Image: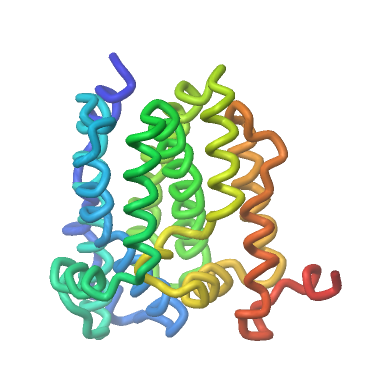
Length: 277
């Protein structure tokens, strides 16, 4: 069975109909959890726009890639749907995933439009390298996304939120595995693609959502999930995973980003080791 066939065999929308909504309502959500879920829902709902941007590029017309993108878009949309359902059940008023995604996209920052223009130019000028870069970037972002859902599942006192996050994280791990495997294949032996990918990561890395959220919003969300020096542990783990890819040894963009955003953060979630430095 091919790699994409394995993914298709288990692809489905995240199951939430069997969750104990009465318990979810009784336990409720903390403000930190509400803030995190709002951010997650906003970013997950934007997947359809990322899909449309990439699908229109000639390099994305590969049947296997289009198959994966369709599956990825479908699963990510229902992550947003599940999050919105949980918040509504817990008394947090929030728009539907579709309505919210439309509103968020309408307010997209200049950065989002610049990124779309930039990726279009790279895809036209360096089509093979672009696919390698895109797969690397997908793996990089999915790795952090998985860590975020798993962290929320571990920390919450709401068992329904914990179970939902575990189910979403399971799908995010599959997405990461596909991106990572493809990035390894596309980068292997391709020195220019490796150098381009590394340069882009060093210049532009930030957690997913930069096109529709401000730098401060993204930094605060990550720091709330991983307060103090925990952020360095998580970012260091991601870098170790990405260093396994050809040409990415020693890449430190995640921990560099964590250090750079410290001044944007409330004092109580800053990393003590970085402040001491």
